[in-house]
Image 1 (cartoon, rainbow, N blue to C red):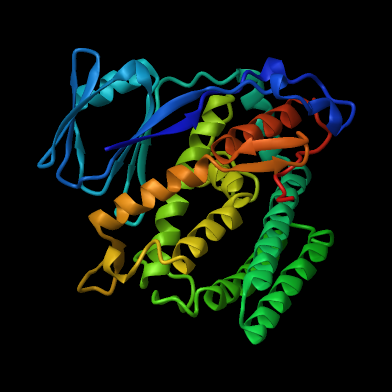
Image 2 (cartoon, rainbow, N blue to C red):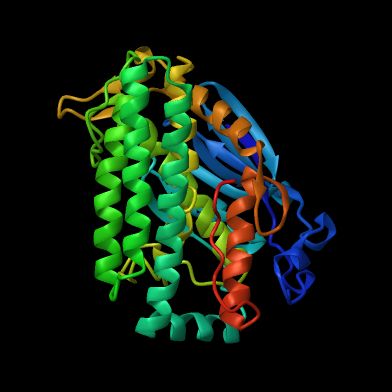
Amino acid sequence: MQGVPTPAPLPTGTLQRPAQSESLHGERRVPMRYLNTVYVRNHRARVQHRRGSLLVSSPEGSQRVPLEAVDALVVLGGAQITTQALDACVRRGVRVAALQMSGAIRFVVNGPTSGNVHLRTAQFEAVMDDAHSLDVARAVVAAKLQNSSRVVGRWSRDEKDPAVAEQLADRADQIKERIARLADAETGDHVRGVEGDAARIYFRAVARAVASSELEFSGRTRRPPRDPVNALLGFCYGMLVTECIGAAESVGLDYQMGFFHRPRAGRPSLALDLAEEFRALTDRFVVSLVRRRQIGAGDFDHTPGGGVYLSSDGRTRLLEAWEAHKETEIRHQLLGRPVERWALPSVQATLLARHLRGDLPAYPPFVLP
């Protein structure tokens, strides 16, 4: 079990209506505080409720965590949670997410919806308005492609092999060229087509970036992941989407009503939209782990069906690195100051809520500096 910091809800009233981006500057205007996400990573663990605390028991021992100190509970693999513990979490407002061994979300349990009815009405109207939905989808994808291009460009500059560096630089330019095509996209399907085309180029760049490592990666695969790098990517994407679900809920948005990812039963569409802006950051984290050999071939299990998953030790290594990654500071261009990585989903959810309320004329997505 492991606890890492996550953001509490950002009070929407603390951000005043900006005349320009500079009016959002100043740390005092975006107050944040740390709460804990508790990860239960042993697949034989059992989570129970005992006198106001979560009791996590496994062959490694037991640990008690006061519920009042927990913001979210993430249960990995085959770990179990009792109905009494679920009930206690819901009553306390603790979000519970169950992830598969690959990191894919199995289910999320939240308490009663606390979102402002007027904000959710505005969200539903925007999602159902083709023009408005298209504008938000374009913004999200443009930011994703710009971030992807910058990350690939960084890999190119860090690459010691001149031939590989040139290939990566070319991939970065190709991705950047796709951004201009978004302006001509007249439908959501057109936007998704541009994104899909850029994604194919991007993952060829990922393959080149990790080609000299001991971990195999021949292209994006999932359900199941077919190689170690895909296992890392899938697991981290699941963690990222879980964060984005919490960020959307924390500001009163419906995480199932998305713009780029259209609403579909059981799909956290808005959380997936928010996650798109941070995928390149997540990929950069994974490639860095692989290049620095912080994760090796011995950190994975291979199934008879060809699936590749992180081992128990591999998950421990990854979660420790993920915690450090979430604490890194990244300059937010709209806020004009560094923001710790863990807070970025909540910042973007707040900005989206402000746009939907009419405080911002357009949604400003997150773009890497």
